Length: 161
Image (tube, one colour):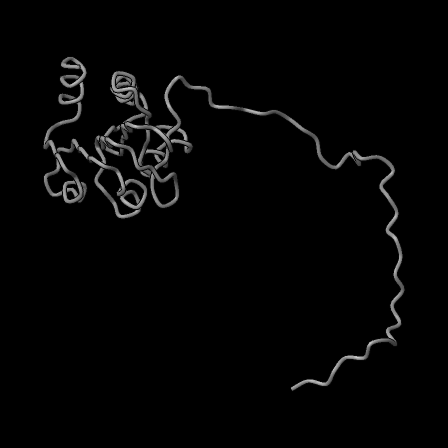
């Protein structure tokens, strides 16, 4: 195939690079560290996950999901649509471009069930959805589905727990 390379005869010189004058050359600096601190379990390892989607209509409505998650001892997640709309932070995103979760109970509230979202939660043991659109794809993968307005169903659920 190829001829064997010569074992000697190269003309390049090998030199040690000079050390930097100081470890900090002034090119970068530490600004801050921000940690999300929560009493809720970590999203990726939670036994229960309550997620909201575009159907939540606003980030102001996510506290109702937080209350539900707190009562069930779970974490709160979101669909990409909810994150992109600014309803919540991107560390809550579940799906192909977010976190993958496999809790014992996954509650999808106002989530249509786009294939990208399903990729992040399809291994959940029991999937429950609340959506007013009976044609939403989330119903196809759910073990239990409630066709209802989430703004009536979730407060009623909170009252019963």
